[in-house]
Length: 193
Image (cartoon, rainbow, N blue to C red; front, top):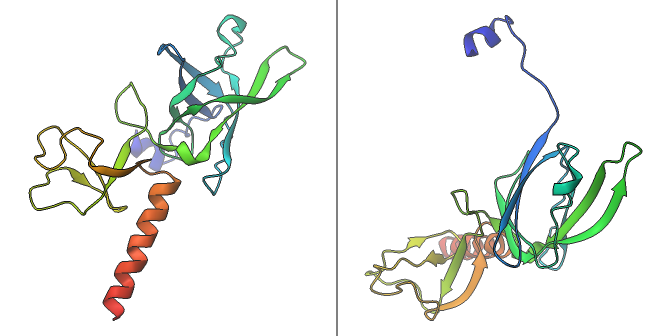
């Protein structure tokens, strides 16, 4: 196919931009949706909200809207960003029904809880724990640029416990980025001294 594309024998197929949204209800049941023309707006600070205007790919009013009070964002795959998740409640901040009867909603969730979605179909936020004291030599947990670790059960220092961490935050989210930046600046100052 690459050979055909390079020689203009075929064109790149075009069509509507699609996104995949997985919402988890308060009871734990997950609902998956494919959406047309997604437009994701991410807040720059933890006090803001992310917004996602979305409409159904097909006109199936029985399955739309997916939102229920208490729903959380398990996984969102939209163009231009990696898979996202947020454990906070998803809210509907706007509704619009077009002349053809298609309902479009604008969903929003707390930006401070947004993070990278865990791999696999279940989704959910990848969390990092910032330890009270830097990981020791016996620590086998995965370490990240923010200083956080993801505890594993066979780590003699951390195990699976939440107890040895100072703070949990969503990996790849706003807090994770701020911590990484602060560590980078501290390291640069240390090299300059």
